[in-house]
Every structure is written in C-alpha cells, then in structure tokens.
Image 1: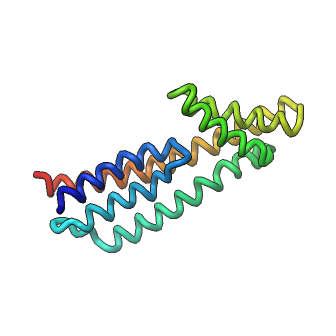
Image 2: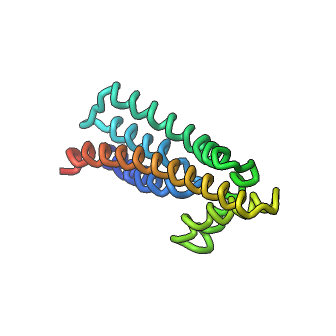
Image 3: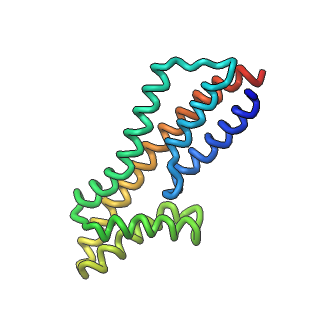
Length: 162
C-alpha cells in the first residue's frame, strides 16, 4: 500500500508544480496532498506541526494568489478589466504560444483589457505591467511553496523506496 501512496503522491507533486503555472489547477493544495499521502504511509510519520505549518502556508499562498495580481494591477492604476485580461491572456498564451505565452499572455491580456476600458495607452501599459508583476509574484510564491513541499515529499519518500 505504501508504494501506491508514493505513486499517487508523486503524481500530486508533478501536478502541483504544473499548477503553479496553470491557473486551472490549484498547485499548492495538490502539493500539500502529496505530503498527506506520504504521511499516510506506514513508514513515514510527519510531525503534526509540520503538517499544520504547511497547511497554513498552502492556504495563505493560495489566498495570496488571488490578491496579489489584483493588488499589482490596482497599485499601477488598473481596473478589473486588466485583471480579467491578464487571466484570459495567460490561458490563451499557455495554449497557443507555449512556453513564452505564460509570460507574454498576462501582459498582453491586461493591456488589451485596459484598452477596452480606456484608450489611454500609457495607463494601459502601466496597468498591464502591474498585473504582470502581480502574476509573477503570485506564481513565484506558489512555486516556492510547491517546490519546498516536493522536496519534503521526496526526502521522506526516499526512505520508503530505498
């Protein structure tokens, strides 16, 4: 049964890391599930404080992922259209222009979203930059948290495999 839990955990680690970049997949919660799966094996017993800490970090990073792009956009003078444009641009860029679409898509989407609200190009560029910066910060936070949980998973799972 431990091997099945490790394989499911490995799948969760991979999907969790991918979820840091794909807006449809909640990366940190899936990475946290990998920690829970390795905890449920017979040979590994993660400290409950570790699980509570990573549960809190996962919840905080997931919540911040929704707040940081909005904050970045508003801080740079943007509107909700810029935030929606950034999200739509990410999805379009991801599917039509990978891997650069992950970077260019949110910026272009925020710019177009702002241009649909106001024809002021300078304001739209500034807002797009803020949205893009917020997206990057949110993605980086998710990647750090999911990467660290992956490291914990692998360090614990390695003892079961060997």
